[in-house]
Amino acid sequence: MAQPLILGIESSCDETAAAVIRGRTLLSDEIVSSASVQAKFGGVVPEIASRIHSDAVDEVVLRALGRANVKKEELDAVAVTYGAGLLGALLVGLSFAKGLAYGLDIPLIGVNHIRGHLAASYLEDETLAPPFVTLLASGGHTAILYAKTKTDFEVLGGTLDDAAGEAFDKVARVLGLPYPGGPHVERLAREGRAVVPMPKMLKGLGGYDFSYSGLKTHIINYVHTKEQGEAWSKADVAASFQSAALDILAEKTVEGALERHVGTVTAGGGVVANGYLREKLQTVCREAGLKLVLPAKKHCTDNAAMIAAEGLIRYEAGDFAPLSLNACASIPLR
Ligand SMILES: Nc1ncnc2c1ncn2[C@@H]1O[C@H](COP(=O)(O)OP(=O)(O)OP(=O)(O)O)[C@@H](O)[C@H]1O
Ligand SMILES: [Mg+2]
Image 1 (cartoon, rainbow, N blue to C red):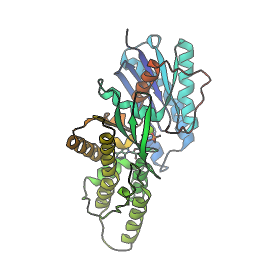
Image 2: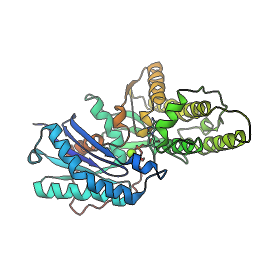
Image 3: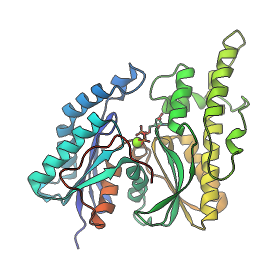
Image 4: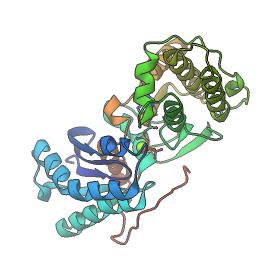
């Protein structure tokens, strides 16, 4: 049977993106980001995001079809993020996808954005198959998951408070770095050394759970104290925070894989674009004899390729959405 041709559309936050896949092969991957516009405000302004999505969505979809050398009439399905995210932003992509699916008389597939982050690894390695353990580390979620099948997973544990990306964004703000903070903290950390003592509580909770609030408070207090006069290095703080925040994720993910007796680890979400985390995961997986599949960096932060990849899983399961599908601001992880 011919591999299905699926268009993915993502508009949950500040990226308007469209991608086309044929089976698990990525044919095109287009994105317009309003992050630089939003940076002026120190975060995403929902109304601005929605307006930029409205201006960009048709052009981004046309570009994705053009680059893939595919006519819209050839598509087998349209997959679109219906949640979680900013309602106004989601509605732009969802309405566009509905119009396209209706006009072409092909299935509409509603994709949970987080499932999209998890599915990004399937594009990276066409042989990847469950079971495996996945590290999800994004702006709004951080958890270690046991993927039993392509559609069924168990949450082994996760953050008790902030998500890893959120912690990076908050620490960036304390260090005077722009939004979104993660890439800026990573860049600065390369110039520093992880010599500033960080609280050990992160590992103290046992199981697979962890907390970022103590680490964040420690850094805020450290910076405020030092600002009273003593010399200090922003780069050293960035490097110390980065290793304290990320080592634990890599270590607990490997623990999960060994406990569940799986041979493969994957990861997804914006924080997985972090070079330090990628290297750490490579090291701990190699030491434990585990295979590691990491999505390309551009498929860790929000993108439409991952939405198309999860769309394929839903397509194969015959899990199609009615045209009455609504956008959801939040969807539980499970
Ligand atoms: N190189 C990096 N190092 C650390 N963090 C990063 C890096 N690149 C991006 N991030 C962080 O990743 C987050 C964005 O990831 P993503 O786009 O997946 O989140 P989101 O879509 O806002 O949230 P969610 O996917 O949970 O709904 C931001 O918090 C950002 O700071
Ligand atoms: Mg995301």
